[in-house]
Amino acid sequence: MKNLIIAPSVLACDFLNIGSEVQMLNESSADWIHIDVMDGVFVPNISFGIPIIKYINKHTLKPLDVHLMIVQPERYIKDFKNVGANILTVHIEASTHLHSTLQAIKQEGMKAGVAINPHTAVELLEPTLEETDLVCIMSVNPGFGGQAFIEGTYRKVEKLKSMIVKAGLDTKIEIDGGVTSKNARKLIHCGADVLVAGSFVFKTDDPTKTIADLKKI
Ligand code: DX5
Ligand code: ZN
Image (tube, rainbow, N blue to C red):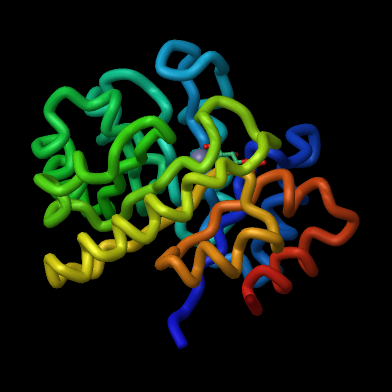
């Protein structure tokens, strides 16, 4: 049985009480903390940036899975490393020189991720797959939490999984957006290794139990 990674997204947490939200994650069976950085240009929303991540990093030992929804992400690789990012994910649609960006992320000692929008074909990931530690398949259009899961995601996961197997790589597949206990099982069956969950975790009465339940799937 493979080890499923659960990465709650703090985008859906209570920001007024972010300290206790992070503490809850520390005490939960969450594997990573997913952090969504939005610039209002690549996506039509602005979330938060470097100082918040620095603060989260100070209060957790869990790996920080930083998802950059920003244009020209290569400008900030060192900055995110300095505030504790362990996995740094850039969008294929926002990276003009993706291959060198992935190399630069790895040179900083971080895992390199590539995120892909719902409309982008997974075949486009093939030339850089060897440099990619993680592919983040967006199962909603990036920019907001709490959206409905796009059903076409399953087929993309299957396709990508067979590309990875064929190439003999161990690139992880992460699913981001609208993940719930309803679609988790099928996603894992199709080849998902990491499930990001924002609203499904933070908008429940008992987030710790919701994380534990996802982890058991
Ligand atoms: C969307 C973000 C997601 C978001 C997921 O642009 O990348 O990580 O926080 O939130 P839910 O799980 O609520 O769809
Ligand atoms: Zn995300």
